[in-house]
Amino acid sequence: MEIKRDIYLNQLVNARQNGFIKVITGPRRCGKSYLLDPGIVLQDILICKTCGVTYGNGTRKELEEAGADYIIDEIADLLTVNL
Image (cartoon, rainbow, N blue to C red; front, side, top):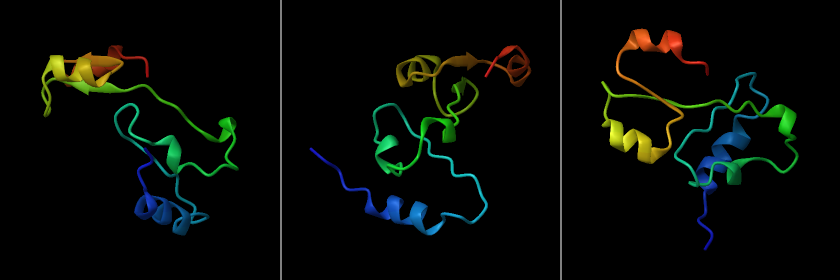
C-alpha cells in the first residue's frame, strides 16, 4: 500500500536550492526515504543516530521501543554520547 506524501514532497521541492539544509525526521519505517529525490546519492545524505531523553515526553520503555540509539536521563549525560 502506498501512502501519498504530496504535501511534504512539494514543500521539499519548493524549498530546493534555497541554501538551507533539509532535515527529514520520523520514526523507523514511516516513509522518510520516500521523500528523497531519486537523483540524490548516498554521499549527499547525513545519517545520524538518535538520542532519547527520559526527562522529555517519553518513558525509557517508549524510547527503547521507538528505536533510540542512546537514552539519557540528564542533560549532562549528552557529554558521554557519541552521536
